[in-house]
Length: 137
Image 1: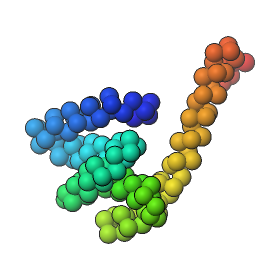
Image 2: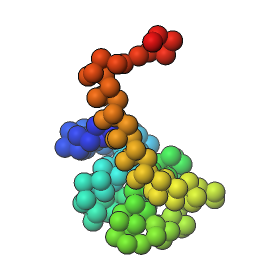
Image 3: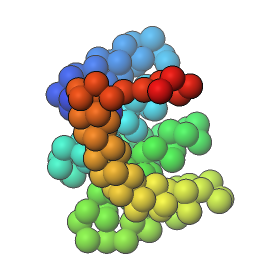
Image 4: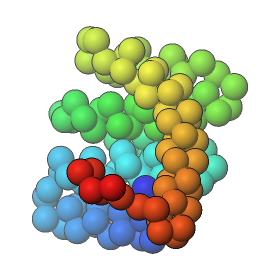
């Protein structure tokens, strides 16, 4: 997903989820399902992404990281639909995690934009032969 190859990522996530379901690896399958919700949100498939996030969040027990990841997906979808993202968080997250999800959904867009620009600048720098490693000019 980092390289935004969403078709490949979706195929691998779905295969991984099926693998985990076949082998009773619930924790791993739920975690991949939470990332599938984020992927669907990134692709603009909000109804599917929200359904996936809510399906994961209904499961119990969940690892905190899985809960946070699915909640970030649900909050991001709510925010992209014009909400403030708070309706998805408060009833599901362990105490103290709500601020983390809110900051991840709001700040994540800015960080993603900045990282893309920095990546393009770095690649251009490398192509011009000006790449240096720390300690070497």
